[in-house]
Picture 1 (cartoon, rainbow, N blue to C red):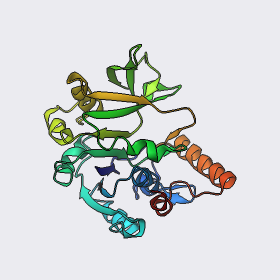
Picture 2: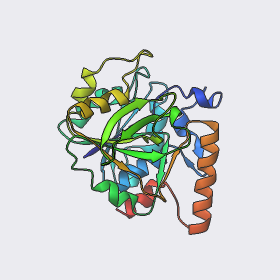
Picture 3: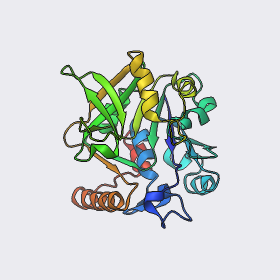
Picture 4: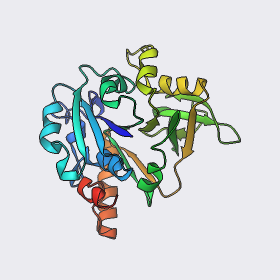
Length: 257
């Protein structure tokens, strides 16, 4: 399995901090934001990753991360000329992915949990697509997943109002080798983007979408807003000070795989 990190977007929720720098290069306590999703992929056992970003910022990521040699992995880079949606990143990454399965993670998402990496590694041979559900108090701000009594996916919605499910879909997705081709088959939304929820619904229509609720004790933080950035920094500081670890450090992650 290969990994794709989408570190694009306009970062409007964090303006003016993002007027001159990518939000994924902003600090989350003592590390740049991009370290956290990269560490998640490394802990899942993924050795080859493509970072997708805008023309303005791709050079800064290359300077920071290099070819991945410091972290025991291989990192390549690709440009997304315009912020055309999460699913569009799979089209940008099509040649890199080839016939492999792929884990797509958003560059502003932070995950933490005991044994999470080992758990994620079990999805690297996925057939179809795998997503996660995470209970939140504000589901209308996210894509949400609806489940039946058997825990099966019945519907995916993008920022529903009012929301009838409180299970948000975190920005980590596992796909089989059809992902890029299926992303090409969906149509842009009203805002001109290829929505990840439309791609997930395509897998759902084929009976190939699975969901797992992240276990209690697992943390998922969206750092794309001022509040989220502050909460994530506070969380990282608390965990590191209490447990004496370096959370979200790719070098440390590579030692634990």
